Length: 208
Image 1 (cartoon, rainbow, N blue to C red):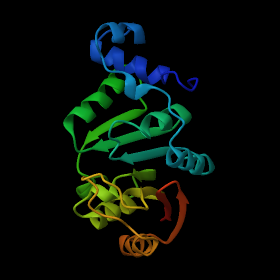
Image 2: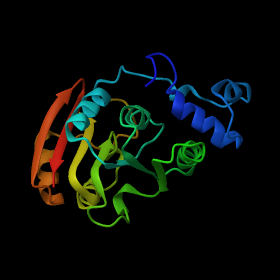
Image 3: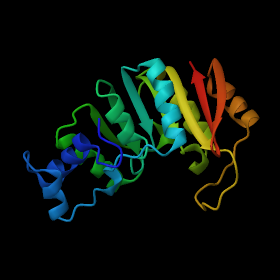
C-alpha cells in the first residue's frame, strides 16, 4: 500500500503504462508526458470511504462491482486495500471508462471496466459477491431501478452511501431519508438493511 500523501503507486504506474503503451514506464515518465495523475494520490481523509473499507474488511469479498466509479475516489483505495479482490467497475462516461481501461492495460488485471448505465445493468443475477454504490443514487433519474439492479446482481451484500444533508451540488437531484432507504431496499428485494452515519452521509448495508 502507498504512504499517505503519495500516489497509489501500482495504480498510477499501471495508468501511465496503459496510456503511454509502454510496459516499463514509470510515474515520473507519466508526469513528464503531461498525464494528470492527481486522482491517484493516496487520500485517507474521506470518512465515508474509510467506513466502507472497514465494512468490506469484515465481509472479505472475492468479487465486487463498483457502480459509478467516477474519478476513483473510492475505487483506488479499494483496489489498494484489497489486492486479491476481482473488481468490476461500471460507469456511464466513456472517458472515465477509458481511464480505467488504461489501468487494466497497464497491468492491473483484477480490474474490469464496463461502459454502462446503473439503471439498466446487464449482468446476470448473483454475478458479484458485493455491489457498491457510493455517491450514486442521488444522481439517478430512477434510483429505485439502479438499486433493484444492484440487489439482483449481488450474491451477498449491497453497500451504498448518499448525502444526509442538502448541498449545493446541482447534480444531486434526490435527498434520501433513512425511511426512504429502507423502503427502497424492501422494494428492491433486499432481505435486511442497516443504516449508519458518517459526516454528512448515510451508509447502508443491504443483505440479499
